[in-house]
Amino acid sequence: MFFIFVFFIISNYSNATDKKNHWEKKTKTVSGETIFFHAWGGAKNINSYIKWASDEVKKRHNITVKHVKVSDTANVVARILSEKNVKRDNNGAVDLVWINGENFSVMKKNNMLLSENWIRDLPNSKYLDFENNLSLLNDFGVATEGMEMPWGVSQLNFYYDSKYIKSPPKSAIELKDYIIKNKGRFTFPQPPDFTGTSFLKQILIELIDDKSLLKSEYVDNKHKNALGPLWKWLNQTTPYLWREGKNYPPNYLALTELVAEREIDIAMAFNIAHASNAISEGKLPNTVRSYIHKDGTLANVHFLAIPYNSGKKTAAKIFVNFLISPEAQLKKQDKTFWGDPSVISVGKLDTDWKKKFSILPRGIATLSNEELTMKLEEPHPSWVKAIEEGWIEKYGSKN
Image (cartoon, rainbow, N blue to C red; front, side):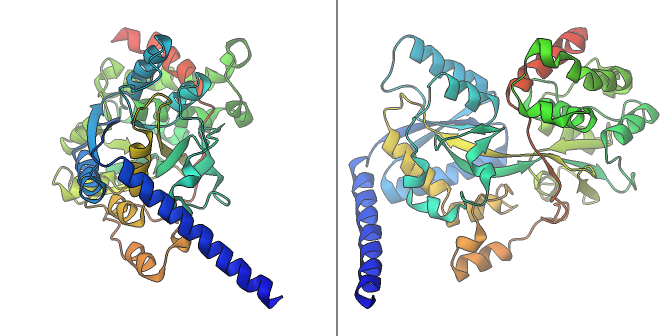
């Protein structure tokens, strides 16, 4: 028995050593390569973080990361699809993409992703708890099947200036009443902006009678009536929105400016540290505070994926491996850099790293983990198109 026990330990150690040596050999084979990372480029702090991570990978592995700043990931997906249609199956323009939701669903359905279950092969994947946190393996209800690596956690949160508002509305019904009573003091980003569409999903989830419908693929003749509560809510509120619903801000950053200028009372973001970051940058007063609706808000994981036709798959994996390292995730969660919650399971870290995560400051307007407990599950990605097209037809066409 003792012999078997010792053999088991030696065998595991040997396997771990072999894996480490294999990984180190792979990193050397791609020294000098350049990868093109297509990621949203609309926020200065996120761009700065990606620049820092790129510089680190250049120093450590001599891999150059070019951040291709995009405004809409759907355009990246369309580009990869066009390459597939003309059979450009090698050396595509995109080596890595920041993605989730409908865009991932489209890429998976059209076989546009590196199909192997590659995420568990990366050394730093040991810090993610895939077994107990199934949200890391599902993207808007679609199984990832190891085709994209979790990179961060997002949750829709609202914020307001406590100097002027003492008790903000904490449900779709309360918000409707607030909008009608305070004409011109609320708006949301214009769909198909991600945050704007997410807000519409939030309202629908709260109002729909049978929430289980949202887990299945949207079929127009079957689910069209299920969107009724959302259109009714919008019919009642749109005339009372900022600029009477005839104009909308382009994104969540524009909302911040409207709050700062006292044009609107309440804004929203998916980054839980956004309000705190804006306070630190002098863009919002320090009396601003965050909140979520009493029954929870939309929450999801965002991911990194490698297109099927990338010519630099190994180099892309090395960059991803760094991005999920304790070092990179700690910096990403730090509000002074980004403030995006980590996907790492702190329980899997050693004592020193646990301490580093535990002492991270959260920011004056950032909600605690306990306050963010109530999370709403994303609808099936097929609902996005129905919501966006319906909104554009009914309300966007009036602009």
